[in-house]
Amino acid sequence: MRMKNYPCWSFRVVATLIFLVAGIINVTASTNTPMCGPYRYHRRSFVDYFYIDLTTMMTVLTSKTPAAPTRDYNTLSTNLPPSIFGYAKCYDGIKGEDCKQCLKSASSQILDTCGDTYGGLIKLAGCCLRFEIFRFTNHC
Image (tube, rainbow, N blue to C red; front, side, top):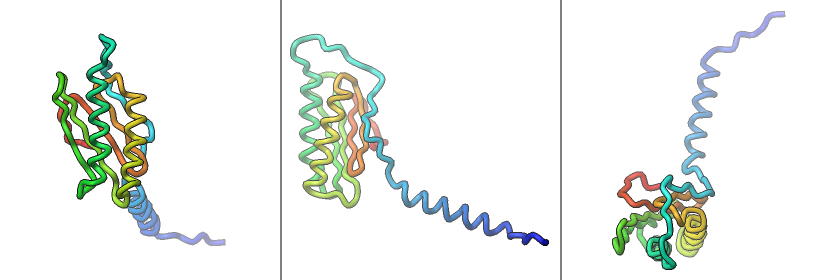
C-alpha cells in the first residue's frame, strides 16, 4: 500500500490561516483583574488626600469618557504632589450607558485593589482604565 505525499504548501496555508484568525480574534485581551503598580504609599493621617484625589479622578473619567467622541478621555489631577495621570477608554461598539457601567465597574475594582498604590490598570471586556503618577503613552 502506497502512502500519499501531501504537499508542504497545505501545512503553510493552514498555519497562515490560524495566525490570521488568531490576530482577528485577539483584538483586546481582557485581564478582568487590576494590575497594581509596585510602589505603595502609607496613609499618614486620618484623611487620605491621595485617595480622595484618585476617587475624584475616577468619577471624572467615568462621567466624561462615554460622552467623548472617541470614547476615550485622559485627565490630570494636580491638587497635591504627586500629580495623578488618568486614562479611560471604552472599546469599539460600547457606547453610552454600557460604557459608563463598564467604567464604574472598572473604577470600583481598581480603587478596591490598587487604592493604596501609585498606579493601576484594569482591562475589562468593554473598557479599560489606568492611573499613574507619571505621564504614560501606552494607555491600555
